[in-house]
Image (cartoon, rainbow, N blue to C red; front, side, top):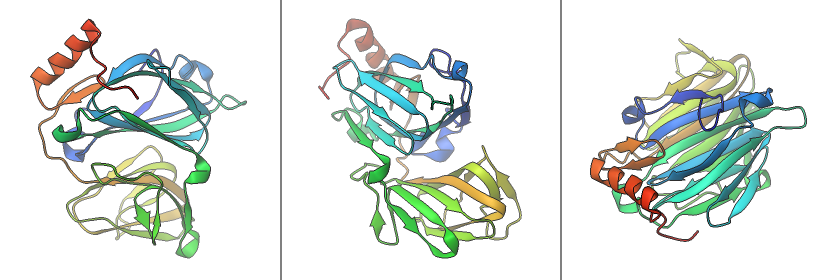
Length: 270
């Protein structure tokens, strides 16, 4: 349970974060019961991170304390850089049938960028290119590049890749990842394999973390498989994390929460 009472599935979080640097947390929220999500995430602060929300079904209304507001719907992405600090809310709304489905990823910022000016990037589904590969594989490119097609989200500090990959039954997908980068897949639908030897089957709601290398291989089994593939350059800095604020030292954390109490938390206008 998070926010004001949202039921979600946490693929990884605080305890696993050090192994997934520069990523901190991944949540999936999926339900056809409005009681599981309508309470939403009322006003709360963020500093020192980026949050990436990818909607598969339903929509999320968002707003901040400076009056900015918007809606992301099915297939849309919001890439929010909290930087020096924002106070915002995110309120999920289902489809007419009550379905809500999406993921939220938290990415860390290095010390040099933690106090940067905040920004929102709302990317609609028609701005996200889809690439057709061999064997009927389809890839939506939110961030990064595949076969010369780049996603609309660029100029991100940790040089991330963010792909939505759909593999037909029996087909295979290969993708280059820079050596030394962190990479993982989170299975959204179906089942298959994310090891070249096809020794261990993975299925929906499972996270696959790859070892170091320069190419990954995933293949669908007897059914189609869909997953998000995320990669990024590790920061390798100390992490001081409490709730929605992630800094490098305990003193910086204490300063952030003191500023929240004093009303001096916001440093830039969005």
